Amino acid sequence: MTGATGYIGGRLVPRLLDAGYDVRVLVRDAGRLADVPWAADVEVSVGDLDRFETLASAFDGVEVLYYLVHSMGAKHSSGQLGFEATERRAATNVATAAKAANIRRIVYLGGLHPDGELSPHLRSRAEVGRILLESGVPTVALQAGVVIGSGSTSFEMVRHLTDVLPYMPAPRWVRNFIQPIAVRDVLYYLVACAELPDEVNRTFDIGGPDVLRYGQMMNGYAVEAGLHQRPIAPLPVLTPWLASQWVNLVTPIPRALAVPIIASLQYDCVVHEHDIEKYIPDPDGGLTGYRRAVRLALDKMKAGEVETSWQDSAVRGAPSDPLPSDPNWSGHTVFTDVRERHTSAAPGDVWRVIEGIGGQNGWYSFPLAWALRGWADKVVGGVGLRRGRRNPDHLAAGDALDFWRVEDINRGSSLRLRAEMKVPGSAWLEMSVTPDGDGSLYRQRAVFFPKGLSGRLYWFSILPFHGIIFNGMANEITETAVTQGSTRREQADASAAA
Image (cartoon, one colour):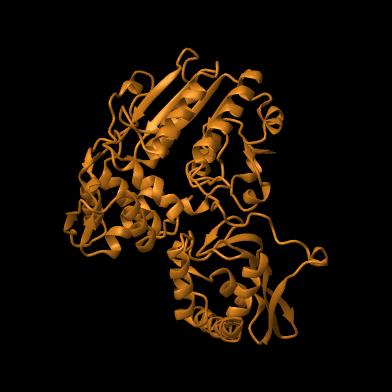
């Protein structure tokens, strides 16, 4: 399995395990799997599709290879979008290594697309499929359109556009036809593809039972979410580029991801054949309709049971190296802001506040300043604060948290976040709690490695706000821990008395 830390891959692995398969996952960073519930049930191989020499050992003994990676949003050093070149190189490496390892089958998930000229995103998806189909290894390339499920990019874009905008000035593509498919049906097909006959080497279109205009998808969501249907006015002047900027500002989807997605919506993306039913029958009860898929996604969100999210994917251009250990700072410019608070709250009460930070709970200090920083990040193409968090109460290594990423978590004691907002350097925020007499010691540290003069100027420009933001954050976290801990004990005593 490649792409096991992504939206589809993270859901497919446990389903393959349930089906009785032995699974090996190829990841660049094994730490991303530290808190994944199925991590102990798979074999982990560390490697990179861009580095051909790492693939031989990963592919050795494999019968079926799932190719579920996508480099959309990658850039060349020249600044031009370069995910096509990145994907071509990775697919070629995989095709060559799979043939050399005598892999029996490749299963690839690509995108529905019309004939003729395509957007770079759809063109790249189609080219990857062609490379794998010509590899000499029997390949099935599933071509899906908009995937609807809790946490999927397409669902989140529809959800936020509909939730935020009572009236939708939209580009002409809202009138294009789309055939969405529920994520459960995509996973059903992917699992079944492992047993296809060896002679099958082709593409298959997959889609749900409904063919809709994008505007109908938005209003279908509105009905299921209990909202009024939104008036939608197609505007011919709203180009794909302008539309992607609009999506970047009013949804959590960052511009690097919105641009290629919006470009792909310029076409009708519908199923042209349903030949897959000759090999894989429809799931019991039939394929899932759009409205039901939305309803299921909303139920998962309300229950806090979102398995994976588009947020799980790494942000291109954001720092990916972990925070070096303190001795390694020697000789480097580094700025820190350290705050400590002694509190009467128990360590467990402080930890609950730390692990619940961000998302709906906010950052416990100067909300306007955090909001402005989030909007500034969105304006320059970053992820912004509205990305939120996948689970309201629990965090795991690799989770997105507003414009941070969970780099390390020692549950009950420490949390380290790596910044994914646009900054001239690399930044981390650490929060920890240790027992201290009858209470706790809360420690908070912000670390910034500046890049050039702009990094130094950035740090000193925000320095006056640190006393307000970080000082207030430390105070409010410890005070909230005291209040919530007291309330929790009172409720427990009342329940015991009853």
